[in-house]
Length: 610
Image 1 (tube, helix red, strand yellow):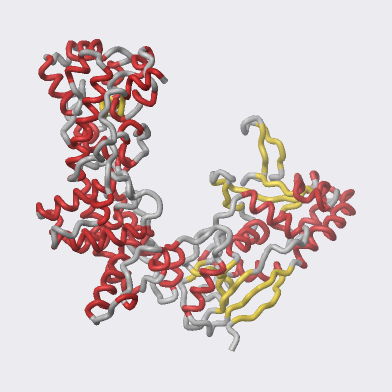
Image 2 (image 1 turned 45 degrees about the vertical axis):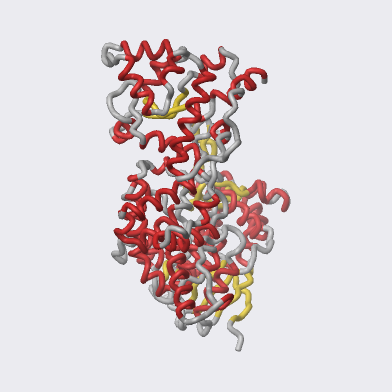
């Protein structure tokens, strides 16, 4: 038995059914996203009778019972609550045509750069009659007041704010393309000498819209929910590709569960937003729906693997722990419902752990991807992660991933391995996770770390902070000041201007070895002077008054060798601070840096030669 029919339906018929609500959207569908350029291009294609692609609709009333909503721009209170068909493919095209042609309200679209705008669309009748190749120039967009402006918005360029102005200037509104008679009557009233021109336009353009046929594939209501979801995924692989979240939302919707409501919340259905709960925690502000799904998938597939092992299965019979896209798309609704709240708490526990490691701001986190296995582990551990033995291992694993720079790029395989191997390591000291084994830090990496977007750069900066580094001027450690809203940044210890005057290469003076977090006020006081000069100025400031011992203690908190800094000896400073940074890196990773990678004293001399 066939599950679909192929047919053609006229554009006026489709738009009428959409505006009356006979055709609606399944509620899981993403919003309308086409911009102004796409809308204008679509109008030109219809005017030239070009094909714009098939539409796929599904009959309602069968096994699949999606929640529904009207196409954007249509008042849900003014249409039927029981649509006959739902749009599975073609939403962007049908919504664009509905708003531009089927409704007289302005189209809520956006510019190519994403700025929200309101537009009405017109055909310049004279330009449209110059030939098919001029139709693209004939379509114009005006603002919600039916005007265009120039001179930075001060002067009106085109004014179509009344029917009389439209008729006098021969601009035909696209929202009258399917019902042009009233406009033609007004043209006879205001500009009857152009009636002949209008009839030519009617024959060439208006008739193209009224006669336009769209190919339609209609899924029958007997189609199974599995088939509907599969079809939905397949037909949405082009254009603006659907995310994993949107595809799973479609799958769950077929089972009567609204995943979009669970994540975004719904005032109408009185569902609280899980996303909003994440955003209440600074470190979780950027957690995505796909992060939550991936963490749940890890736990579901781990549980499944353990079931296989308990059942005596071996080899390929044992299904693996996975965080890959295909596994996430296969996540059963039952598993989502079972794990979602627990994993949410796991993410929150992960944020507490990160605060303990001295991460307080989302921008400081080296890898968002490392949050996923961390949250999954926290879900399984519960409060146990605070036990000293487990916490030490968790910290070592985390810093190995950061300083070994192992969580950039595609990390689905590592995520799955880390979950399994961490849980094993907590029970058996000999079972080191792959991430801890793989992680290494080459001392020469310190010389190339210049970008604050680098994971290792962020990590080393936080390692300095968690040693209790204080500001050179303001009273208090850097993180304490940061929490109070004091303007902070990472600045040069030997100022850039001084380094350039000495002929040092930026490759040397711009590395993290010559940088540390201090306040903006301190940085301004440092200026471009030699350290010996700015330290004396800072210590002697009437609001500071620090002796050498007190200032040296602050410098040591930043792992800055005070003696070489006061002597303006950049070469000695560079080598000594490099070793001190390596000490805190090795401490965090629980292993020595790569042996034989550097430790020569010629770095600065080589840079001077270059």
